[in-house]
Length: 539
Image (tube, rainbow, N blue to C red):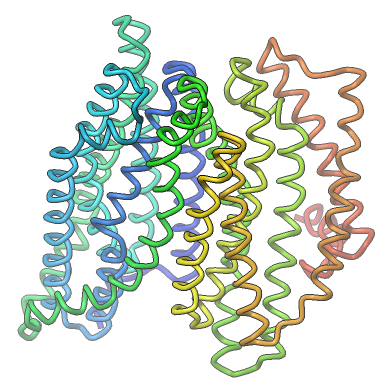
């Protein structure tokens, strides 16, 4: 057996998790300087372009990087190194060609798509801006699928340090490019603010390019060793057979991913045109859409990263219980996952709602702060539902409920489509958020029913605990009363951040102490607060 893979599973998993977290953190930070350079009025252009980027990227590559990783791991374990290299070659070529084809088609149809998305009230200047952004975006549609293929190869070899480092490097280059190139264009060359958006879209391609170069150079030693081993290996399997294997593994994930993109596609394609057609002001619609899809969405990623990362660590236990058919233990573990995720998620969401205006000011300044903080408060409900729904979906897939999850995705997308036009007609931008809430709730309801029907999970105790967590979280918001005396400073962002940290830490302390008193700490983490403090002091 070759000794290319030296990294343990635990070490690799920690490295991969850290890379994802760092990537998400960097992705959150770039929104602040981008807002400053581009202005809130231009953020809708970025949001629309990025939504199409996400959709087209997933169409061109969804599932195939996973399939590459799985097949590389499979043939590596068999010492079939020539077939392993063939998997890399076919998978990389497929994603490069598919990315190029998607990019070419997008370039050809960029102008009519831009006109359709912005609607009949859009100015020719706005349509030209979005058209230009789509052209710039085509570079990323070629480079990012290629990057995904190379990452899949190293993931299959369990070289997760390279995998994680490439994620962090891609985001770092992207953030630096957004800030530096945007600053040069807007502040030094005195170009229009929209050039900051142009640079932000170009930065995605630059980040992917640098990450590809890094992976090629950092993987030279591994590639040399694999090539050396392949020289003495038997002939590879047929290329057609490998291609069928790639599609067989990748297509199911592709369909699930594609269905999951429908709600975002509905928002980006119909919101601006429909809302303006029923009487809402075009400029206000563009402003609200940019705030929701960029500013609020980025802030919502904070609880989503924390809860998702914590909950995912418990999922492997479900697999073991299912294999043993120990449904009593499985019932306990499902409740344990929900308890743990909600223990973290409920207070974070509530604090983001309570301190929304201060959080929004610290991140984006006082321009449009009233509208931004109002939309943020409502959007945090989406963050709560989406995060919990993501945990439900992850567990259901782990428990071999894949077909049912496809049905759940289709049904929730149908709910989104049906409620979207009614809600937007009645409430405008707020209706967009409401339709997302209703869509997410429909998915969670079906997920809970699946757990109950297939595994007889009893949620009665969970409901009582969640109510207690909510009460503790509400009591922890008492420091907010001090704002009526001392208030927040909305002239100085640094001072506001310091005050926000004081209030936030006070709320955290109250919540932790109350939950410890009620026994949640010991229930979830096997130790109470005192035992944890003693362990820390001993170190």
